[in-house]
Length: 180
Image (cartoon, rainbow, N blue to C red; front, side, top):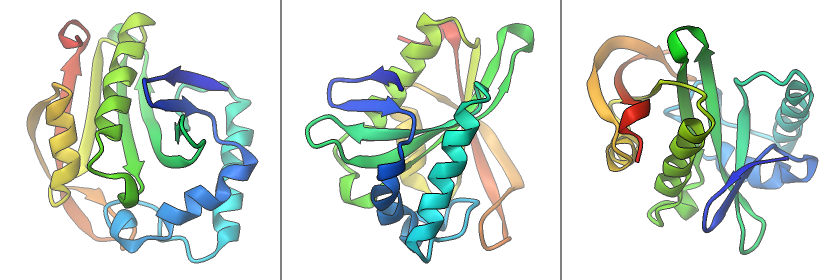
């Protein structure tokens, strides 16, 4: 099921045959060093993750993970994750994302997040949207700045990565009325 599209991308639910594309970036330690899940060491881990996500879609929760697919060749190049949703006070969403390093530097994540923010606004889903990143992951912070999010502060030793070490987290937000 497609959630939304951009000029070059389709953001959709994961499909069983996406496992090779997921494994391509989830098995890269340069990608997973900033994430909570460990680096994938075998293809079965990717298959199991997608199977889990497909089952989770049946719950129709707003907290989900979606594939980012290139329209031109149907390759999955990353993921968009709605990590939490608080429906009170108009709603607060916190999201995250991962992009295959082979596709970084092409504006794909900026395009994804800009469209995601518009999707949230057009569907009146939330009044506040948040994203965080490890302060050492400067590329992630640059994307959030490009889409108009504001750095609210640094949460000291608030994050935990897949190596079970604590790190400082940069917290960004954008409000409903600020989304263009």
